[in-house]
Image (cartoon, rainbow, N blue to C red; front, side, top):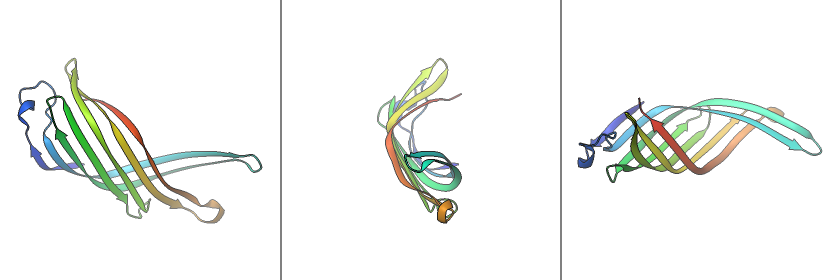
Length: 146
């Protein structure tokens, strides 16, 4: 769920057939589901595998900055976990977005960078599972709005 804190129309989107991109600041509240399947092979010990899944409550913000009729820059950041599942969950990223239409459908292609940090621990002793990591890299996202 998101709530617009600030939305300022930008002149070049008013007469466009493309989706309107306003300068916007949004607050967001929701959850994120994480599912992991881990398989590890050791020469002397053998194979080990484990599956885990959890849901983290998340709060965050999104900033959308249009800089032409077709292009905008989006920054997303959230914080979550709060001990409900993960102790801490931190996804953040930035993307450039190109708006266009496919037939009658407004669409966008986004490319940028995303980092997701998690600090999740479950169990104890030999049954303990720890996922304390930061995953990061390029991201491509294509959206069609119906």
